[in-house]
Amino acid sequence: MNIEYSNMNCKTALSPSKLPGLRYSLNPYLGCEHSCVYCYSPSTLRDEWMGLNWGKFVRAKQNIVEVLAREVKRKPNGTVGVSTVCDPYQPLEAKLELTRKCIELLSRHGFPVSIQTKSSLVLRDVDLIVPEKFDVGVTITTMDRKLAKKIEPRASPPEARAQTLEEFSSRGVETWLFLGPIIPELNNSEDSLRQVIEVAHRTRSKLICDRLNLRHWVLDRLTPVLKEERPELAEQLPDLIREQSKSWRKVRSNVESICRELGVGCEPAF
Image (cartoon, rainbow, N blue to C red; front, side, top):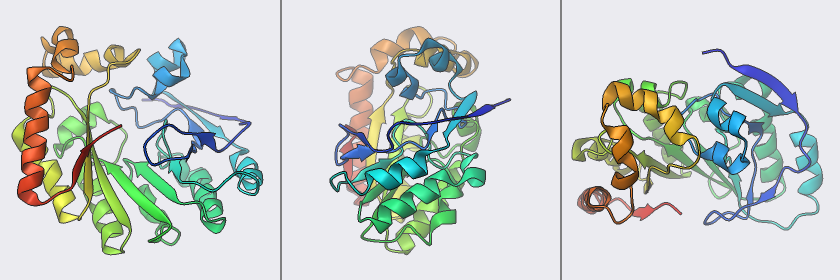
């Protein structure tokens, strides 16, 4: 897949966040080349072209470090989520190091940082990501490498993400595993859930789980995969993922049961 890269300027680096535990969000990039077919981040941008082409373009916020350098001196302290609508360690970060420069600034000015990623590239910054100042969350939807390649084509393989959690946990950094989205008939079997939860157990990570969110344009990008894996599923999905559906209640029960068995802390997202 060809990715369209470009630069842009941002007016602010630290945006107010309504997500639990976060005061701010910081997104060094607009767009995400991991190309996850279930991602609903573009729905927050309310742009149809971006929604339908999510995963095919990345715009680097070339001035974000300079903007952040001003903001950390005047904005009240608070936990910063890096990132909330893109992956801060997507492949372009290896070259540009915008995320690295931002978290270094945040740490130096006493802002706690909560990182969420699907990339082992975050290990590059182990010299900066230290206990007390950071927590690291890694999203693992499935330990099935073939399925992960279909739904998260340019993210790190599941085993690399598990190793990332292991490394940070061994260094005393607080870690958490985001199991989501849980998609009916793709990654919601008891065996699939157990494999992921066992990673949380092994790495002493809290588990946060979430169901599929079918916001604007998600089904458009997800349908080609569904047609290949479960042709009949696209029409059924809206009913299957309802919070009170029998399907979701069973999944939630399985997750909670496995977590109790393994002694893993578990909570729903949002």
